[in-house]
Each structure stands twice: as C-alpha cells, then as structure tokens.
Image (cartoon, rainbow, N blue to C red; front, side):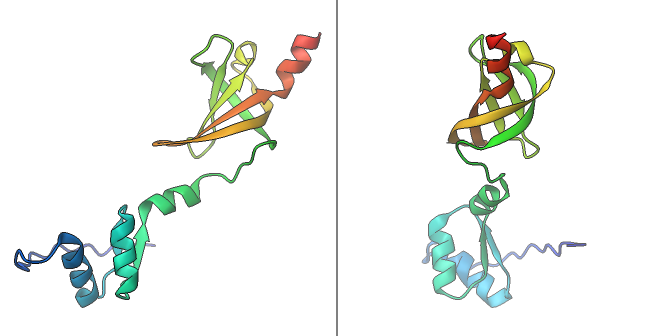
Length: 138
C-alpha cells in the first residue's frame, strides 16, 4: 500500500440504533472497510456484506508460526524472572524465556520450545536451551 485515504465524516444518525449498527450502515453506504477488534461487530459486518478486518486476527496471523518441540535460535539479552532464566525476543517481539539459560546471556543459542502462552502482548514462548544442557554436562 503506497497511501491511505482517510476521511472523517460527521453524520448524525440519531440515537435510536446501536453503535455497531451505525458503523455497519455507514461502512456499507460509503463502500468502506471496517477495521475492528470487536468480534461481534465483525460478524454483523460480514452478515450485512461489509468488508472488515479484525485487527486481533491480523496480529495473531503476523506472529511467527512456532510449535512445541520445535528448535529455534534466539539471542539471550537479559535475566528472566527467575535467576536461572534468560530472556530473548523473536523478530516480531515475542518473548522467549529460556530455562537454565542465564550463563548464556549475550549469546545466540539453539533452544527447544516447551510451551507457548498467549498474552496481551502476543505470545510468550518458554524453551530449554540445547546449549545449556551441553554446558551443564561438561
């Protein structure tokens, strides 16, 4: 997209209808798309034939597709909540908490994902460092 055509329209639609109904009505009449985080508004728009984009769904779609058991590389940059943990971030900003990774802070390591927890800021990925197990074994 090279530009965005944004217009503000001041229209009085009265006070009888719900806000969602007004938004869908305006979008349909203006041939506009609705951008929303409201699931029910998106469903109403779809039912009435109005193009829409749920920003929460877009946000989730842009997160990296990682699975439990998958190995990834991550740079560890600071201590975690617990003293034995280290924290790094994926390119999309997802936090990766590495168990027993404290001694590896400052390096990029191979980790295996053990769990993924959704949060308001995206996904928090918990992992075990494959390098730390080698370091502890020596």
